[in-house]
Image (cartoon, rainbow, N blue to C red):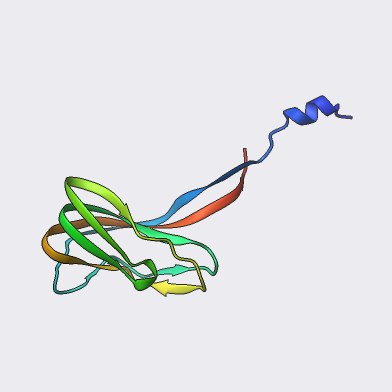
Length: 125
């Protein structure tokens, strides 16, 4: 028989939430203002789970990150790579193809893209 004081000492699940990276793909391309740059292979989502993608980006200018479900405009002014993320999207299951273009003048380069999903709930300890 276990005493009540012993039960309190047993590990209890912790609650946590946050973005977790599912896949990262190297792109290493400069963006054009006249055409879309494909940001790697397509990505499939599950229904009613929040997703976003983040890019490692550098340069001096503004990038349009698509598709529309994740549509975000990001501005960068850095000689080294920094991370910028899209808005999050949740809805029905779908397959998305990320693409980007430069808005206006400047020079913008994307090194990699990381697809992420939102996790919440119990975490084993």
